Image (cartoon, rainbow, N blue to C red; front, side):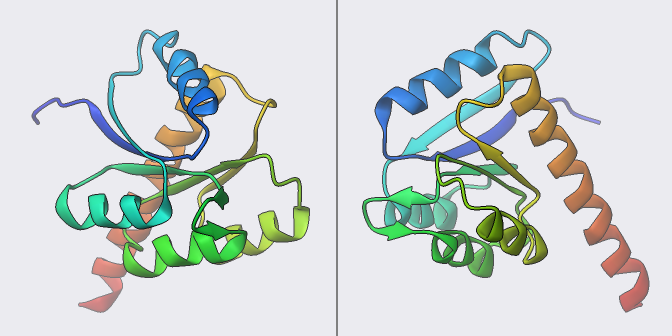
Length: 140
């Protein structure tokens, strides 16, 4: 098995939040990753068409999309990539709905640290890999 860092796509419009998130992850020494940052949903979707990512970190308030429609736009086009939502949108209904529809995690900004985020990323990747393996087993 070849080792490689986790490829993370961050879709977040606030540069301060993006820097804070990256600083959090940098403090987790055992978490090796490559981060690509897009400021708009449209740019993130274009990046996903051109590059293979292991996980998506998604804010739900972007200049060109807001709320659960942001999640749906990404998930409907790339359902095999785990999505960890992190947002200041404190709406438990949207949180539950996005989880029901396939988001792997829903974190509220300011309520997690780098260890929490790296754990959420690793768990989301493991869950999606497990779900994909079940689809393979049951589709044969």
